[in-house]
Image (cartoon, rainbow, N blue to C red; front, side):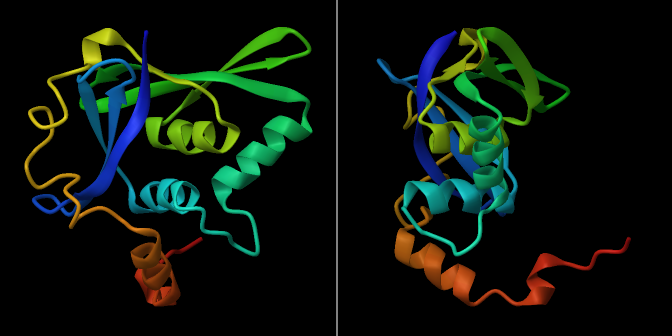
Length: 166
């Protein structure tokens, strides 16, 4: 497993989908992972230090992990199968290891909140940041700044969340 960090978070204008780009800590290889809007916003909110009056889902996960006396030792992006990435949360509670299956986007958002190391299986890493990511991904004009994110969240309407039936 190779240690990584979040290098970029942006909007892929070709697919209108958010992308988080993980880069190896001591190198140039990257792994772009296309993620959903809620997870992208959660990552951006935390990275930009935006505070909410009530906890978001990944803040709740943080509270559950620590409230149950566990610690997040690391997250691992383990494989890709049928165009789907898989990740694991490696927890410890009372000295006993606990591995929890997770989507990479959720694992990253939780790891950032708990300051846990992130790892990617070496076979998943590609070229360097400029070569391994499409041109339109992660450029400064596509990245979410704290101000842009705040404006975006302030102007959201209920219909922006889509229609749900129970």
